[in-house]
Image 1 (cartoon, helix red, strand yellow):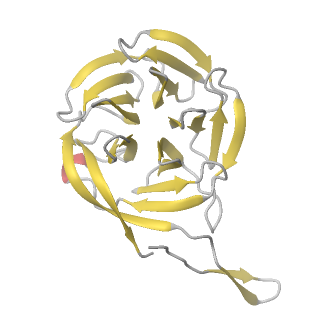
Image 2 (image 1 turned 45 degrees about the vertical axis):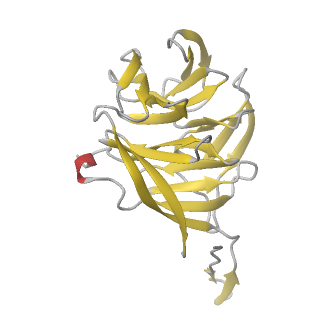
Length: 257
């Protein structure tokens, strides 16, 4: 179902109204398929699914890590702690290497997926928030309306996208995931994911996740939605949040705006 709306813009100088029809945006609701236990101490900043496991980057000074988590039980099989001076952020899987951002230190790290051995460090030219790959490029968010398209070998910026909807720029873009060729992004401090055209930056969809979080996941502070993972082989979508008790497998349904 396509959803077409109207936006009214007031032209103050002329005292008239101009009616504009925005591009189609698909709106989604959700249903919960299952709930997977999740470590309440994990301040989730990045989430990736691969071969029956989640790979997770957690944040916080003194609590940042990368983890291998069983996708059925939530059991942490393997972990590597970052230096206490570093704040872990986004995570992506590139050619069996885990690529992890940090927040304000402008440093990133590459690990072997097998043993979490640190193989390389690289420079980040902005704050690190979210990270995802389409298999050719890395896409990095920094909490603004911008998405930086990076070379996965040199980490130089190939292109900068400005994410916009029919009203204007969409800011506070956080954790990222590629699904069916589109870039999905958590919007910080909102129960919302935006679906972005990865070539133009145009918002093409919105996922409303109001009501997803259980009462056990509410503790105040930064207990916000943050974490998207996709199992492409089984078409399974997973979401979670910072210090949430569960990772949720969900199914989406198109709804009217």
